Amino acid sequence: MKAQTFLPQDYRPAEDEPFMNERQLEYFRRKLEAWKQELLSQSAETLEGLQDSARSVPDLADRASEETDRALELRTRDRQRKLVSKIDSALRRIETGDFGYCEMTGEPISLRRLDARPIATMTLEAQERHERKERVHRDD
Image (tube, rainbow, N blue to C red; front, side, top):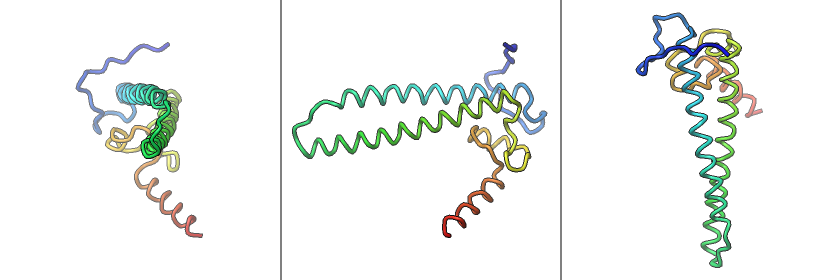
């Protein structure tokens, strides 16, 4: 197990330091792990809520409303599950040294983009090209 990197509480990655140095990697690792923990605790709450609402509701309107709520909860839970998977993938990229670099171009992803969306795998430009290409193929 490698040594813990010291990180001041107010640390923010800066453009004037080496890209993806130990401090930046530790910053993003902590950010991703905190986000994952938050999602997992929300998932646990969702499951508890779904179990509590599994009771029989005699009124048809109330039952329909509860079914709609349950469907929405399940969709949210599925989105969270996919997000946790992307977070795990980003954590693996930190371990392998690929984190912060665009999977299409190999260029560094901007620190501002990574801070806003640490699961990003492409630079903004590559992401936009990818989405334009997807739209064109969708119209076929």
